[in-house]
Amino acid sequence: MNLQEAMKKHAEWRIRLRTAIIKKEKLDTVALATDNRCELGIWLHGDAKLKHGSNPIYTNCVKAHAAFHKAVAEVASASNKGQYADAERMMGAGSAFSQASNSVGMALMALDQAVRSAT
Image (cartoon, rainbow, N blue to C red; front, top):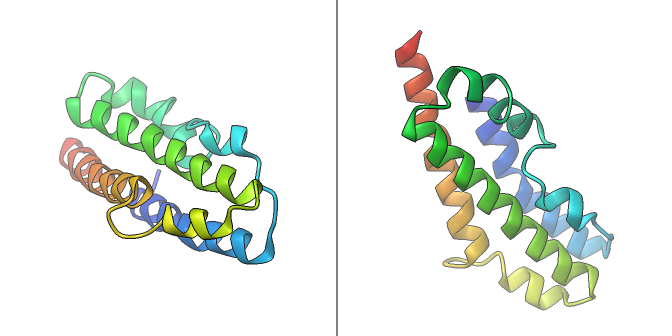
């Protein structure tokens, strides 16, 4: 798994959500809230768990990733209800989404360093 690429893909969620809000697209909040469907989540709950499961950095990354998906789903839910301004605000600075996004980014960087150090 290329964690640098995973960080980039997760950073793109803000764009995906804003696009859905602008286009008034419905999003599958159940799928978005699930942290083991995306490429990173599949790796975290599979190979990474086998290789790094006992490492607290791994555990922190899994928790941050799950929280991020929950925040994405909450924004999507507001948008699906037609609460577009609220959904936009939910992605603003200091929001749960923004904090979760920052946390998952930092956790991925830490995990990337740990993985590189282990090889």
